[in-house]
Image (cartoon, rainbow, N blue to C red):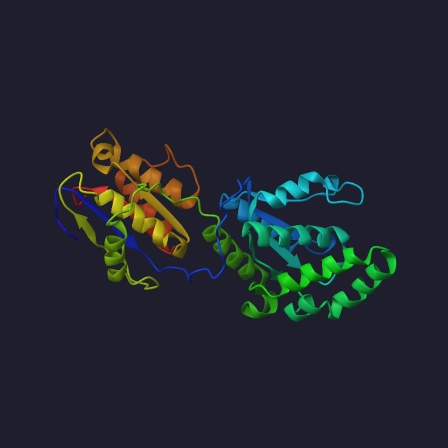
Length: 326
């Protein structure tokens, strides 16, 4: 850590593996972070219910449907809008999934948004094999034979098949391959991935990036993303030369590799105020834990214990603008 009049430094914990899915949501605004697609009879009261609660505990905005939203023979406009305005869709494939025409209709819309809007789709193969989803075999075979028997418009059933084939090829989670089928561990993995994909922690940058990218690349070469070690380095210099601008650009470049992040600005100004360090501690804890602790931190030492207890097992990226080691 460098000693300088002005310094931006950050602490890096172990980074998460980078996502292979596209996370672009340009071109449309979002209302929800996650849309859950599942057969209620199979998983609403167990796995999907637990996943829904776990996502919401992390501050993730979840759309989970109910019977009241179904309208006649078509997906209700509320469901269509919810799918279109979600960043991520999570289909939960269970043995009875294909028996539900509502699940299949939602899946067709999900695939449409995946193709046209780069919506992220994270499938969960709850108690089925991905190959059975791709080829509509196994527990899905009989369901599709019934659909073809009962529907005069066979092109609709083919749309369902096509959607199953597309999502069945996407990388997701197979329950039986996650620690011998532990549902709680699967919930944990899905929540971690959803947090990364729905992160709203990108910082605004300068419009004209002349000379910025090369400096960010220099800093990236110093980092060891994925290391379990804590790393510090400083960006030093006189005021107004662009230290914070570089720090923000670096933050945005690597933020997807971390489960949580916090960018604390105006440290000198904040710390000089009465109870300023406690206020900064509260902002850090609020940002990382999604828990409001204003008024709960009684002293700087008390805040240190909160931070140590909450963050020592997390993968965290922290940036601040400081001018004194304290």
